[in-house]
Image (cartoon, rainbow, N blue to C red; front, side, top):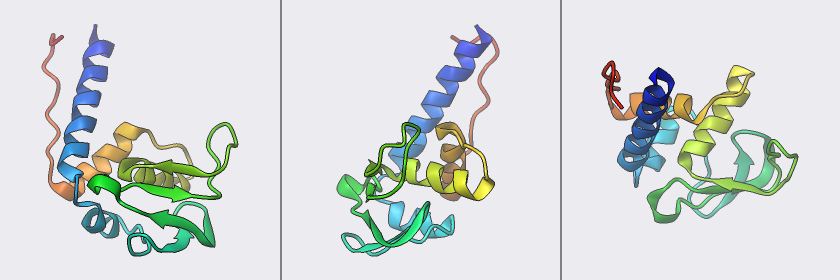
Length: 124
């Protein structure tokens, strides 16, 4: 039951951070020292490098991006995602080990000043 509580808590926190970050990604990413080109322009990918393989399009204020080179876990190329996924990828490269979505949300939450509540013991 404790694991279910922690999982539910993590999901709730991730959703709260994503909602709070909406429309804020051009301000959040520089605070995490993640350089992206201006919206709609090509540039180097903050996760895998290159010269002109990455586009930050920030659709619907979600921090969306596309990289024509980043491999995923299946070695597929041409990857896209939202701002939280971009933070997760860049943090994984910087830390030299995989970073979870929850850990990426905590990084973004710190920038936004979102204090994470501790799950109540016995909560469902």
